[in-house]
Length: 125
Image (cartoon, rainbow, N blue to C red; front, side):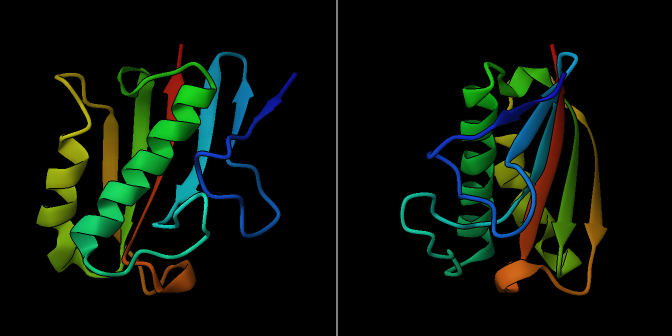
């Protein structure tokens, strides 16, 4: 049976999806963009600030489900501009100890709300 994960410490979905779904000890986290959870305002000052807020949103969702960054097994990073990869990668790396999940980074034409970075993830217990 699937369990919907929702926390007020991450942005509410802006469409017909859940923040995350827990199924058989696997946590599937929807793509997160840089929206402040309590104001629904979009962070667009810099790609670094966007990436940090995205990772904080992911952190809030995994914590709500009783998981941690060490439980992540797969992440996908979507970037509007691959020139932002080094900055986003540096922010991303700072959230992990020494256990890194499998990952890909993909350049896309556009993201919701004009975001420059979006990250989705899968965790396992």
